Length: 172
Image (cartoon, rainbow, N blue to C red; front, top):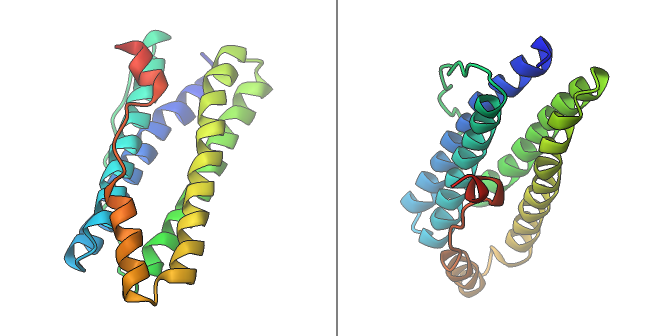
């Protein structure tokens, strides 16, 4: 595997684990504010991000590469409104999309078609993640100032259940 592609893939493990920490901090904020459904949503997001790290880890192992785990930064976001974590999530997902795109570009540059194919799932996943984040912002802006509507949104988010991402499920 090309050294730059390897470095970017290995670093992405750290980025995904940071994403998991970040979303867990969002869950903590909502839990502390009494919105257990929103907390549930972000607890599941945290699990998904951890799973994304495992998918990258597995890919490196499957390709005979050594995984180097790096220190995970502490999330540094503080919130004062229910909308702020949602906006931070969209901003973060756009950042992760840019990281995936950078890995894809590096793989394309050295004609690493296997890695490009591997990343196709993440490209689709990022589209879904950004879309979900955008919808949550829209719904909070529309309904978040009404207590009953906010309660309904919270109940809807409480109903979300975790499912193992398909690349990880296939590896089991």
